[in-house]
Length: 380
Image (cartoon, rainbow, N blue to C red; front, side):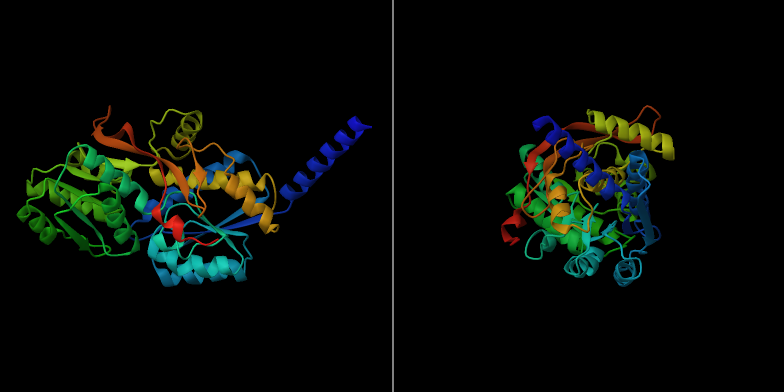
């Protein structure tokens, strides 16, 4: 009788799982596919879709829309996805100002939002929500890890620079938090800025012994080219957002020697990462970036939860997401109490690759098990 009961329970669980998988899931992806920073959105989209395709499931529909890096458009697209398309999950946003325009209202309406990139401090702290998960990082993490690394390397007078928007202010706050020393100056630039002559002159006139900057996408390309032409002899540090494979190839030899922090590297030695890099290169004929890795992990996080339940059962789906029961390409991964990752942050160096082009090489770990400081503000 015990054996029959066990078999019966197994059949019931199989039937329940099959029913959950048979019920279609709609995912709305809002990401930046045109204008400044579009390669970030393209890579998140491609990494995400690669994971869905490799899963071989035909019950998941991914709807993709371009936000054009505009908060008003992102908000409108989110409303369309939720009201017209009745999506179960939203994802995809790259920039933190767009996330702040979309996420709070979306999660309050009962839609899950899983971030593959933007991680503003407010959403990690005072505005956290049970339906919001970040599968990438909290904005401070990579910058804080570089602050810790530079302190350990003996740099005593860094000058720091970032754009004046939520991720930029988080970046410099994060750097200072773990650098634990005085900085020479903080420079805030404009979003989408292309001319950095004034900032470079300010850096030249300072007595800084090093430069840390956060300029994602085309901003980083413009700055590094102008920095190289300036002739200033100063070590350059940053986060991976300013040194992904697309950016450093556009910058060229000027990027070689720069150090950057990342939650992922293409030469990380684990089985999930090997499979991801090989599949991405075969599918898209290019090297994946950090953003592609984050998109891939975000999809696999969602898939791991869908193996257990459908988002219609919100409590069960939320718990399945919290478990993070998937093999991350970055290695160890778990969620903190505010649904943001606790993870290792690595250091990479830009070197000349075998093809003569700049590439990132893994150096080591900057900080183990980093956790954002805002989780103590999260009441959930």
